Image 1 (cartoon, rainbow, N blue to C red):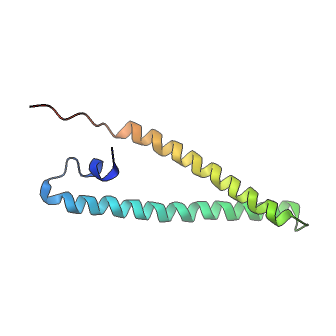
Image 2 (cartoon, one colour):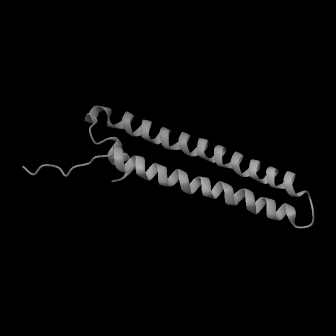
Length: 98
């Protein structure tokens, strides 16, 4: 089920606009925080690689690849965790037919 339909599902019609705005804000803030966190992880892993191996020929490129690889693993783990939490918390049922 789409994010906004799920977020506004049980809201009063008068509050649906505010509920959608809160869902939009949460999505935007979450994306910003996630980008900052995973950028920090990539930069830290790159720096650690360079500290361990030095600045030899080609090592800066390898360090950047290592940093992106570590951050990508973190992103994959976060997506799996988010999927598990979503499956556990969102319980939608078909509307009763009248």
